[in-house]
Length: 287
View 1 (cartoon, helix red, strand yellow):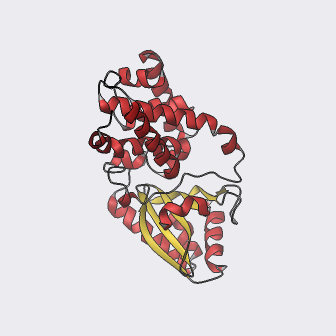
View 2 (cartoon, helix red, strand yellow):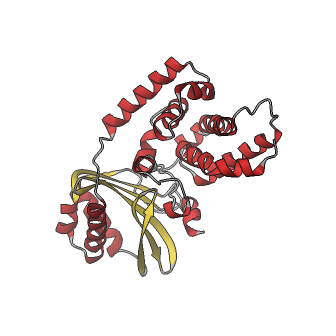
View 3 (cartoon, one colour):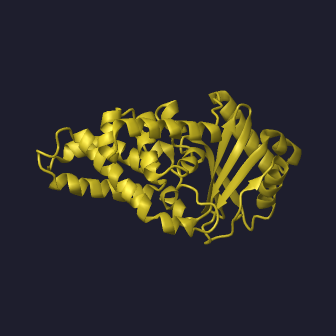
């Protein structure tokens, strides 16, 4: 096949699947490119339906990639968070509430607790709405097995991440209050914004200084954040942005990108914070 227009039409979907599978924009782009090369070599006999063929190829490539990268990921220094994305630069990634939820850093981290095949089956069904017959042909399992995998994945994820819908006005208020309390050094005000069992993850990848273990508890997290601001070696500039469909901040130090921070909200408070400091994971934001 050599129909570039058809491939281009489905390219956003392929990237959307690959990024959620891998948690890396760079790796997702590689998967999309490999899928295009296979698309060019495919015969008309192989491609009965372009969308089904392309999504199947991309998903299988993702499964293979995850299996081959398992050892490398296990050796990663500290929390290994997904590569952040500016949602506005990727049309279609988070156009609905469901897509935005499946794109959040907190949700992507949870997906890593599933096997590559389970992750693929769950995403194809619950995020992208594929039929079980289509999923079965992609992952090489029976429809019954796919139904069972998706059911187990739903239960597993729901137990570890209950849903707490947050209204847009709540989200706006919490985001701005968080920024105000951090920059003003208001410890009590910051603690009041956090759930008691909040967890903060900081990903430096062993390349820059970062907390190598998650920090838990409202008081500890608040003190950690305020110490980062107080001990900053230069002038901080903070810009509000939508990161992975969630409220976040792009932080620069003396004019150079320093880190990206996202908030995971629950009802009227913040239940999780993800800070990506690893420069390798900030290249897309920097660009």
